[in-house]
Every structure is written in structure tokens, then in C-alpha cells.
Image (cartoon, rainbow, N blue to C red; front, side, top):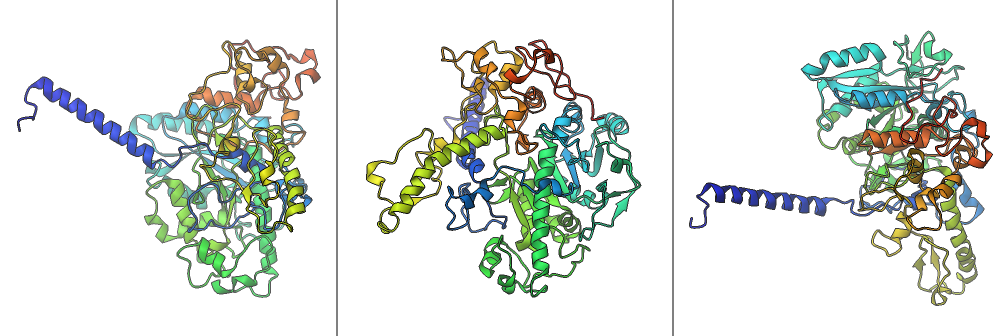
Length: 614
């Protein structure tokens, strides 16, 4: 009792001291418990994407290295056989596939009108988001992609404003729950979508084996950013192939998203057709090894290892939710630590959504981190081992200024091609060495091949060793080579490379691998020289329509959002030296007109968003 403070001043000081100690302990615990303490090897993710679509094993350690460079056993990453796993997106057959129907719900709150307006006037409607890079497809691919904002019940002082916004734009869905993130909103959204999500039908209907194909509904009131195609205002709309969820702090390129989902849908249908032609269509779980699928390992061990709470048998007949046994089962997103798809954006095929809305046991699994809960639902599905966990970890990342482990510069296909080429340039001589020495040194000590930050030769002491094509663990000395970014430096607040950059130059500095991202005070290249060497959109996309960034996440400021707008929706089509002067290309580049061509803006201005698609 002798040390207990009695005077007001000592009491206040003691309380302040206790508060400071509590804050420090809390911060220490957050640091200790936070698994994201180092930037991720995103360059490796972009070099050889994971080939597996199996549900991740619940027995694997929660690290991000398990699926890196996951080529099938025996495939040399420098061989022609590996090209099918490293070829740029989209595949050669892409344009032969009909567009997928995507219902994209943007999670927002009642007071988020400013961000909703930004989304409406940029990525939800802009031709470069919906058409893809030049040459675009006129919006055909996203002609069945619908964007809606998902809110809980607004607060009383926001009710009228939200209602007026709903009447004006016809793009807001108010769920019958209080606003929340991790207390049931996601489950409520998918439950609503199972009954009320519709998208335009195919302009040229094709026969589909899906149980939901014949469901139809009269077209709802259209939103200004809805696709303007004949099927949009047709007699009826149909069920979506996917229901996706995205946060409003994400910037989405709709054509890229639809393209990935379209390919995943095609692959799932192709696989299920193979299963239909198998000898048995009513197999128990312990008979899964009989399924003839070269793409998936459905052995008994695989089923047991990758799923939990599976029933004794996995039905092939339609389940009680009236979904066909051959409806696509797809869970698409950014796979985090081999456990769940990150919450910034993920998509579920409609049959899974229908099951989620009906399954009683899921109603008790709605509290907690919503993306982790969704992954738990996937593992409880009666056909959990058949769900395709389609992960995209190269083209989904955080804003360069976010400062997270998922952040790096704005990414385009040309830079990823350069990254891949650097890896091949290093691995090809190593591969020859492996083939020459493998038989002579079968018992030699092996060592991992690091991703080179610069071209480097193999030390003489290791020239007779067997080479393993693996990535190092997170604490390996060469990890910075995998995580290197020309834009961001993890743990350091972002600053522009040079003072007094124009708006357009500062955006170019945020582009991964750009000349502008490499300039520095007193460096060999000035900002003007770096700006003159920038790539146009055709060069950035290597002449393709698709194959680039799908989602930029963690956009916590509207300024950051506008930076993403200018990086992906603005700029000229051609490299500066190829653009005629009369198109308005000057120190500030070409603006964001409907076709990417407009007079240059003043250096201190950000261009207004473009009008909706005609």
C-alpha cells in the first residue's frame, strides 16, 4: 500500500504509464502473432504458377512456399513440356469459349458513397476494364458481368441517402442484417445471391449441362454501368456461373477477372465430362482412384489428406439443394498460406452458392474472419474433394503504397515476361549441367537453385552436384531475389523517386520494372529520359487483350485509387516514339478518353472518370 498513488498527479501518471505499457504489450503481441513479417516471393509466383487445383492439404504447414514451382514430377522447367504451365494467359482456345456469367458483389457500407461513385465511373464501366487491352473485344467478354454494391441495413441517419442512391443507380443490394464484416454478411450475401442473382443470357445460347441453365428471370432495372448488349435487355436473364465477392478497397479489371473465371469453368466442365465417361458414376470415397483424370490426383490418400468431415460416400446423384452432380465446383481467388482464398476478391461457382444457402450446418459458421470461414464451408461440402481451388497469386496484389507483404508495383505482362526470361537464362545452363552430371554423380549433395537477382555462375565446388529446381524457404538468403520490387521496399514508407514529378510521371514510377521506377537523385537517367522510354499499352500487354493484373487491393485512400485508375485505364496505346504528335502526347502522356486518346491534362490535375460504355 505504501506505493499506491494517492495524489491526483501521481494517479494520472500511473494511469498513463499503465496505458503506455498496455499499448506496448499489445503491439508486441501483434508483431509476434502476425505471420506476415516478410514480403512474399511474388516473382516466383509469376514465373511458374501452381498447377494443382486440389483442395490444399490440412496437414501441410501454413506457408506460402508449398505450391511454388509446382510442375508435375519429372518436368524440367526449361524443357518444351513446361511451356504449357508457363505460357502467358489467355490460352489459344480462349476466344472459342462463351463468356461466363459473373455476378460481382462489392461489399460497401452506408457512408461509402464516394468510393461507390469512383467504382461506378471507373472499373465498373470503363472500356479498358470491360474490353481488355488493345485490341479489345468490344466488351463481349464482360457482356454477362454484373456489378452490384452489397450493404447491410443502413443506419437511421443514412437511410434516405442510401434509398435515393438506390433509386438513382439501381445497383445497391441491402441485406436484411445489420452492417458487419465478420459476423455473417458474407453468408447473408451468398444466401441472397442463390435466389436473386441474375446475369444476361448468352447472345447465342449454347446447350449446357448445368442444373441452373434453365432458370430465368425478367431483366431488372439496369444500372448505368451494366453492359449494353442486346442480351442485357432481352426477355429474360439467367443464373450466373459465378457469384463473386470483392471489397470496395480493391480495383478490378473486369475483363481479366471474367477471362480467368471463363477458363476455370471450361477446365471444370472438361474434367467432369471425363468423369461422366468413366466406368462408374456412383463411386464411394474409397473408390476414387478409378476416376481417369490426368489433371487431378483423386486417390484415397488425396481425398483423406485434403478434406475434412467428408461423409462415408460422396454422392453422384443430385443433392438435396437441387444441384446436379456435374455442375462446376470452383473456388477461385488468391490462396493464402494454403488455407483460404483472400477476402479482397474470391468467386464461387453457382452450385456451391446454392448449397451454401441451403446447408443448415453453415449457419453456425458465420462469425470470424469471413474469408477463412468460407474456406471451412468448402471443406464441409459433400463433394469437397472435387472442388477446384483455382488460385491466382501473380496478378492479385496490394497497392504499391500499401506497405504490406503483398504489395509491389503495378504489374503488366511485359515485366513478367522479363522476369521469366531471367529465370530461364539462369536455369538453362544449369539444366544442361544436370543432364550431363546426374548419372555420374547420383549420390552427390544437392542444392537449391536460387532465383538470381543478377546473372551468376555456378561455383566450381558445386558444378558436379545434382540440381534441384526448388525455391528456398522464407529465411533463405536468396529470398530477397524473389521478393525484389523496383517500386516498393518492405518496411519503408513509399516516397516518389524524385521530387517535382508530374502526375503522369509519378504514376509511371509506380509501375513495376519501369524506367521511371529506377531513377534516383543523381542517377544516370533523368526523369525526362525515363519518361520518354515508357511502354505504351500494346507493349505492356505484348499485343494481347488479356494476361495482366486482375485485382489491386488495400487501396485505403482515394488518392491511391485514382493512381490505379490512371495506371490501368489511362495512358497511350503505343510507345511514345510511335504516337503521332497530333494525338496530344506530350510531357504528360495521353489522357483517359473513351479510346485512350485525349488532350494532355495540366500537370496538377487528375482526369475525371470516363462516361459509361456506349
